[in-house]
Image (cartoon, rainbow, N blue to C red):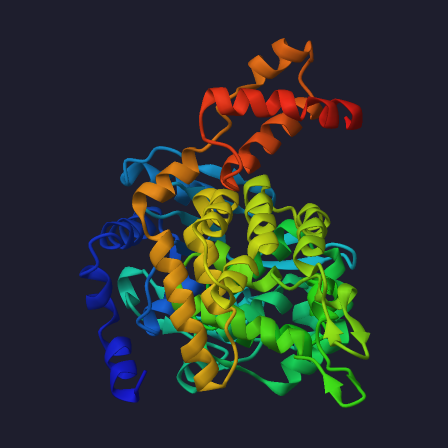
Length: 483
């Protein structure tokens, strides 16, 4: 943002708020409630920061000098919500307003115990005292909603100056800031990527010195920050900072060991860490879908443990796609990922080489059908991941590869074929299999269905009930003996 735009926003802040159709009623009623209850009220945090940066506004944070509970219930009534979610221990209240949430907190000071990021003591404070406990100066700016100075900015730590310079600093000593709440170290990195800001050197050094304190933060909060980082325009900015500050060792150890290049007899391999982040950034340019970006982050997760050197072949990562798929079960459990996201990442990791392999060989309908069947509803995402996985700088190689790759995409673009593959299943159902062989539900029934489906996909039998039933009889001895 240039200085002209910056000062325009500052001088016309009241106008900017009043013209916003979603937030105008909230601001108006908040100011009215402040006057009615004689409680000093301010807009704070990310809302003020993003407003000054002319970025998209999301949820509203209000700070009051006084009874936050009383203020919250009165404001909820005025906005016709008539519902307040209480976080009484932290003097904080939430109004679930349409299209956004409104958080109301009492201006406060906090003290912490060394083994917890949750405050063990909360006391009332002034607006300036409250701003001093904020994570960064750019989030320590308040905007008055009080009648006597409506729209005035309270900026005791020169956050506006830092916004204009594009830097991240802490209001107080960074060691104290990060020790109180180690999650702020991850937030620093996420903001640096999200806002394209530089982190001051003393902040970086403080994070390096206290990186191990991230261990007291719950995995739910860590994962939430990593997901927010993946949603930024260029996620690699944040992941390089995670590596630089040693945080990566704690929040994603499987990624931390990716970096580095080994050389034997003049043979080297790509730096997997750098390659991975190139793929993530490529994916970010191709799609806003966080899940695809996450798949890009983990698609080569098993390359370090599968790396081997052979005199006649050089470096190999044999089976890294399948080993990676298995590794993700453990990673997902640790990071508290949803089962849906876990399964998605496992499928894309397992299949990420398959379309690339198709592009390098003679393409057959059978091979294309098999990939589409295994990818199912994620086939489009898989193709985006494969495009993102092209990181060579050789223009001739890129042109040749893309030409072949586009042939694969053309075959896959047939909507009828896609629908067939998504709906595909064995013509012989589980009930028939169980009745024929006097089986109960279990591994054998699933194996019969899998073998029948694969035989159809490979063109060995027709996709009919009679052909599938006969094939089932033909393979019964093989399956019943091994299951």
